[in-house]
Length: 316
Image 1 (tube, rainbow, N blue to C red):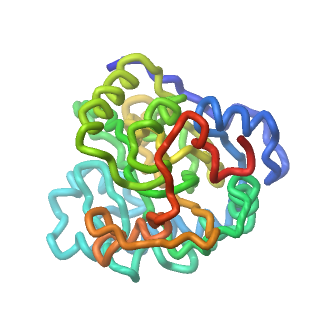
Image 2 (cartoon, rainbow, N blue to C red; image 1 turned 120 degrees about the horizontal axis):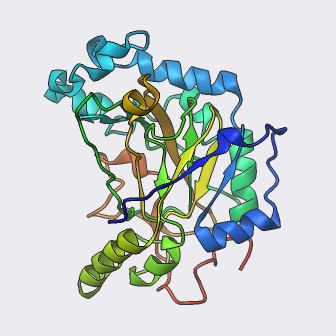
Image 3 (spheres, rainbow, N blue to C red; image 1 turned 30 degrees about the horizontal axis):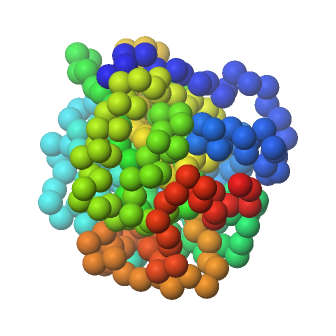
């Protein structure tokens, strides 16, 4: 694996007025690299409401917003089995705060209004996918990366999702400097992985493609320099769902001498063009994986070709 990471710090760019228009340059970048960034797309008060929602739902105040020592005191060791279906699993320093069922964390109006349903987000999604769009029902959750304690060495977990999203976005809730667990992408990886799937957007892959797919991911990891995004509260990374991605490593304590909890919300969009949606018996969404409810497989989906990668979009 490449040791180098490109740290793209959007905080260093001059602040601009909120811009929901998608430029030709951004479309070109999206097609080539698989992502582009919109700054300050979510107002500060909306982001703060989502941040407070996160802290209000920590089980038994295991970690506390005003107590950084609690973030470093092995909080995963205090997690209980009955916490998992209600608020998700804290595995060492990574916590996806979400509920498994059709209600609960990930469906709160406060969270949806601050992220996937916010008019600025919907405006960008409409320009990329056209419409009408499916009305978002939830988000994947609030994804937290806790700071690494001293002497702990973490690593990236690059992977590619296997759900039927047509457009994904990562909303940065709180200011995230470099080396603080920022969302990380492997540029151009979407172009290389498109061909392996059974359909252009679906969640299935033929058995005879799986080994080659994993080999290609390893090659991407070995040859492509990943980009870790840093930014301010309300910045949003729009990205192609087939990309190789990972949470970054939160080295805030060792690099900045100040621990930071990285909070971000991944969301998904899908067209609603009279598709015949169906329940995937293997991958859901189903009752236990409701965070994928906005990314349904549909019968009209077709096999991937070199020419149809952008068929769901407003450009080709």
